[in-house]
Length: 254
Ligand SMILES: Nc1ncnc2c1ncn2[C@@H]1O[C@H](COP(=O)(O)OP(=O)(O)OP(=O)(O)O)[C@@H](O)[C@H]1O
Ligand SMILES: [Mg+2]
Image (cartoon, rainbow, N blue to C red; front, side):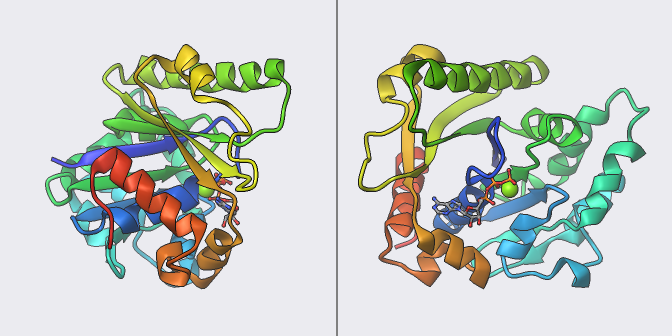
C-alpha cells in the first residue's frame, strides 16, 4: 500500500505544486505517482505536458474509478495522473452526492497497490478539492510561506494553518501531520519567519520543521517542465528537496 501524501496551505502561491513535483522526483528511486488534483493543471504543465493535448485525466478517473489506471502517463522517473481545466466541472457533477468528499479516495483505492508513494497536488480552494485530497491521504505536509512579520502576524498565520489541519482531521481523523514546511525562505536570512519553537507550540512537540529556500532555479525548472534537480542539480533549491526527501522518507535521487 502506498504512502499517500497531500500538501496543503491556507494561502495560494506558496510552492505546493513545486514541492509535489520535486519531492516526487527525489522519491523516484521507488514507484511514485503524482496526481494533479487542481483545475489550474499547473502540475501537469510544470511536468512538461500540454493539457490541450491530453484527453484522459483525473476527471475521467473520478467518473470511472475502476478504470483509473488507464489515465496515467509515465514521465521521466515517476508517473502522473494529469488534469485539464475540465476538472473544474467535477464539483458540480457530484454536488448532490452525500459522499462527494470521498470520490477521490475511491480512485486511489484502485491505484495504491501499484505505488510506494502517491503525492497529491490540490487546489487551494477549500471545498471539493481541498476536502477530497486529505480524506484520501495518509499523511499531510503543511506549507507556510516564509514571513517577515511581527509576532501577532505569525501567530495568526499559524492559527489559520492549524485550523485547516483541524478541518481536515474532522474528515479524516487518521491523517498524520508529517511536517510543516516553510517555503521561499530568503537564503541570506535563514532564520526569518516562524521558528521551530512556535511551530512546536502550535502543532505538537514532535512535528518536523523543514525549509525550502527561495531560489529562481525552482521557477526556471518548472518553466522548462523538469524538476529542479535536472535543471540545476547543484542549486540550493535542488539540495533542499533532496534534504526534505531524506529527512522525511530516508531516500533521494543521487
Ligand atoms: N522555493 C521557491 N523559490 C522560488 N520560486 C518558487 C519556489 N517554489 C515555487 N516557486 C515558484 O513560485 C510560483 C508559485 O509556486 P507553486 O505553483 O508551486 O505554488 P502553489 O502553492 O502550488 O500555488 P497555487 O496555490 O496557486 O496552486 C511558481 O512560479 C513556482 O515556480
Ligand atoms: Mg499549485
